[in-house]
Image (tube, rainbow, N blue to C red; front, side, top):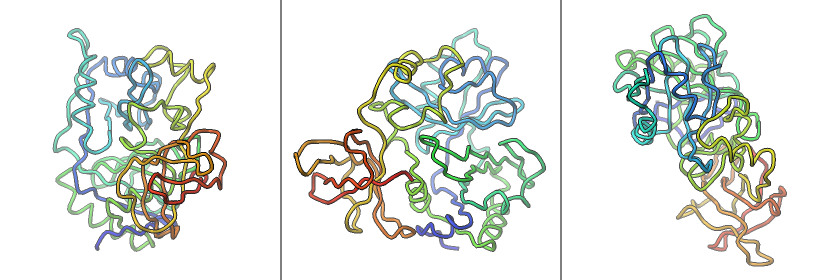
Length: 328
């Protein structure tokens, strides 16, 4: 089946994508693995339970976002799933904190798993025949591997519905890819292209690295405090400014959703957003794509709070009209 960019069936049932480029999964092993990670990530790893799945951020000392990753707590190891193309960079960052006496090892889990991303309101019911019994966020797949179910809310606790990463043993990929595809499409779902899955994430208002998540932004600006940061775990890199922003600070900009005039893609991103009345710079468009499901061009970006009221009409530097739209 040819993968599609149309996310309609994924929104109504479920969608699956088998990415063209392999994901670099990082494995953390050793008896100090939890305490080691605890000091360099924003989530509470030490108090997580086996089979938990967490979303975490790696910050610099000023609390700017360096990396993001999904974390799976397995019985004998912790797996980190960073965005495609960032595994080597994240591993290098992690190893800066891995001292000689630390009983932990960090490495790329090369060639061990292929990955599929899945999403949709009926996802769990559709996948149930492929999963072994269990009630954790990590579920074993009958043909081998794991399903990692994400929290059902994301930025600013916005409901995004069921989403899961499937870690499929490389040797089992041909058979499982065929059976998973048949299961999802027979239930009314769709096989998405890489662009189709990116579109789905944008439609749900989920920020991505490096477009929205990078060292120019704080977690709070992206609305990630509730899903990605523990304020009870104690010290970690970036903890003091993160806490100060939450309890004392006031940010003047935040993540926003947009609808753009026309269907043509924005040729170059990021692009400046202007207040048409004053011709002042009020934000930046960071992602944009045409959504077949919504029948309009949508986008994400950062906008001054003074201009974030839904329906506000603004303009790109190219002159194209853009309206503020609630997320998702």
